[in-house]
Image (cartoon, rainbow, N blue to C red; front, side, top):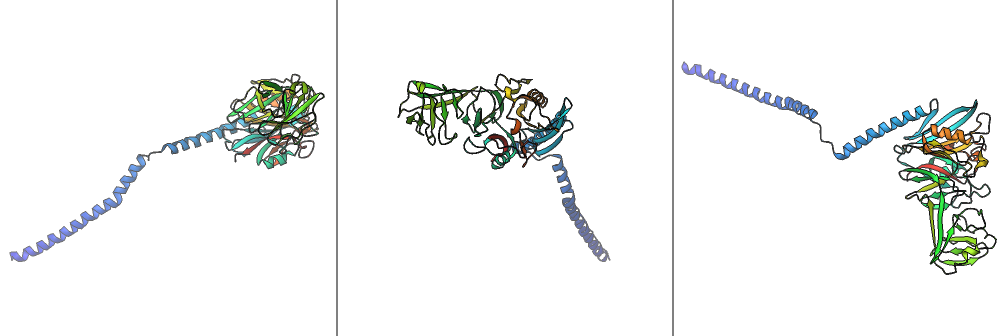
Length: 415
């Protein structure tokens, strides 16, 4: 009897044990499958993954860039209320507006460039051709240089296209100053504007002669001038009682003559009064030293104009001092300047028509000051004033598309 009762109890206990074991195992598996991931996710959410230096720098840079873009947008809108503003690219804005002077309208095109945002772009002067004595349309120069912005540049001789005034491109001085007119120096990290003089000489042993200019038309018979292949193939005629000598790529004088000489490839010709140059002889080794005053170290490009419009944050128009009396009155105008934080300002003013009468130099100076320029200068104007933006001429020059020009200042993407 007892034996019969014990067997069912054992079987019952065995079944209960099995059930309990399955329950415990199931609970364990459920805990592993459900609770552990929840705890893990919760833990990961509370403790952020470590950020590398590169990642943090990138985040800071992106935030800073967005803030710079926003500040730039707001500053331009505030500066030019009511103007039509178009974003050409980040950091490059085209502004169109009309102002009234004495009740007469003046159409103005402005380009403002923030170099801290538009980091992929570079500013440089460009020539119409490989040599100085050529002209071309601004659209052609802009397209040839893959530029999004272009504005006419220095004064030039209409008959030939030779720039009149200081012009340096990619650290190469192509032409020297006239009447010590004002010019803009373009550096990797900003700009400077000053009246520029040439500090040049030709030397051979103990003999040193001052060089008055490079690749410019002769203004005085007493001047000593240097001509490089950028001028062309033949130097201009010598002055009365003058001579010239050719220097090859090894800095040796190869020929002396009273007649115009062929300019050696990678060399130059010096032309001036015989009384100054007769100390040099064929076979002499000479050095041509070219510098400017101020001595802009690390300057990449120089483009000249005149007169000043803004100097050290003050309106300053020195038209008489720079012998520019002939460009007074209301006319189409071009100007270039920069702000305290090195934003570049390019301006083209339409004129000589009923819908836009043009500006005087003083009106232009006040406008450049209102645009935030701490330094600014006038560029060639009148019929030369033409601005190109994003594939087309945006102002209304007297000749459709603008007259043929010697050179321009352009903004293009870095290669």
